[in-house]
Length: 286
Image (cartoon, rainbow, N blue to C red):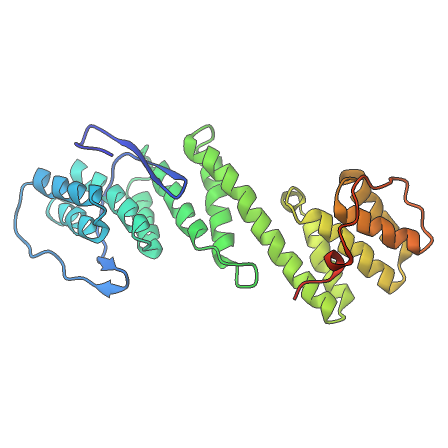
């Protein structure tokens, strides 16, 4: 963590690597949802304000740190100290779980200093804050969509950087989440005896190149076999079973699909290399 205007370091939280460099502007302070009074205005040396904020940061007094970094901006706007103070606010808000405030501070930095080398950090933290707010697949995935857009932006703007490396890993995780959402909806339609709607969701997983690399693809192909057989579309069922067998011969989902197809008189070319787990696996959850 920087001890002066000339130094920087790596800050970690829950496996997220954040390279703090430098920062600038103002936001209303908030701590755990409670309004906090601003520091009383008193002209103080910029070094004192900044270093006091940094000391609070080291002690994990995130909200107090924000107060001092905001005061740097208020008393010394447009200065190098002020520009660096906003980066510190982004980080302090993030550590305190104030993701909306961290995103707002990131946006502010990007708008004021789009050409700064530290803009990479602001872009990365904005995407990471959305990533941290992703909820389970049974709920709205707006945060996942925003995280995906932000992470792709980081990977595109800063290829080869540590931010891009971490963004690529998170992109795969978000795609798995979004594919899981499609599967969750597809299973609901299948349980509700709406096979065409279910097929649409399962095909969204199978046909989306980004989703094809997720853990949900084998089940999506199996569910398509299952639904097509239910509809009497046996050629379609066999075609999806062949795709499943070719790409995932060792998946228990293919063992299940193979059993369904052979029971229906079909003879898939690829024999499964995995055992069927149990009849429970075929039950649609929920």
